Image (cartoon, rainbow, N blue to C red; front, side, top):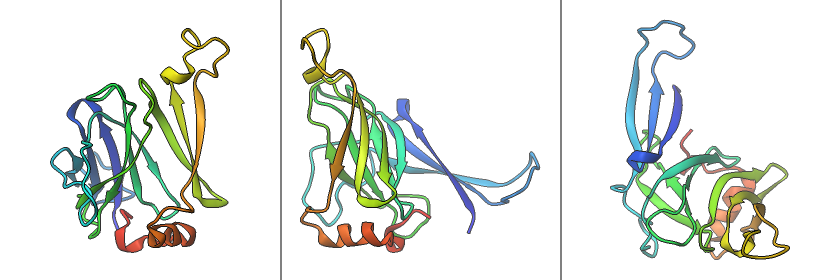
Amino acid sequence: GNEVLYVAVTSENAVISIEILTPGTTKVNGTAFVRTFISRATPKNAGFDGTTGQIDSPDNLALDAAGNIYVIEDSPNSGSIGGDIWFARDTDNDGVAESADHFMTLGIPTSEATGMIFNPTRPTEFWVAVQHPASTDLNAVPNGFGDAVWVFDVSNVSDTGFVKALKRGAFRFISNQ
């Protein structure tokens, strides 16, 4: 297939996909398709329970072992609670997500996720770098922890198909690759 570059455009509340149609070329006049991969207009949690969350200030992107893309929001977003992380579901691999699935919310006022990475040896575990959460603000909480890396494990979530797919690295039916 063609090479695809994904770019978080924070100020536009969107992530774009740039599909390079002439891979490996060094020509300035190469061809590419630019699409809105995910935005506020993308349906939320299609086929699942709804969410009141919205795509707001996407700032970072992360990949799991199967190449699925997660969108990490900047903070403070539209409220005082920390940013969200979205799972971008591109079922037909066309560079446009059919659904933005609300993967998680940090839930701590003023917290901001600044990166996310999956554990390569334990695919259900991932780490999220978090900065300035109010609960560990060194100015407000004496002897607090300050910025941190939070560890999550989704082994026990109710969607067992999702967990099995993570363990196999087999999301090809919903992958962006």
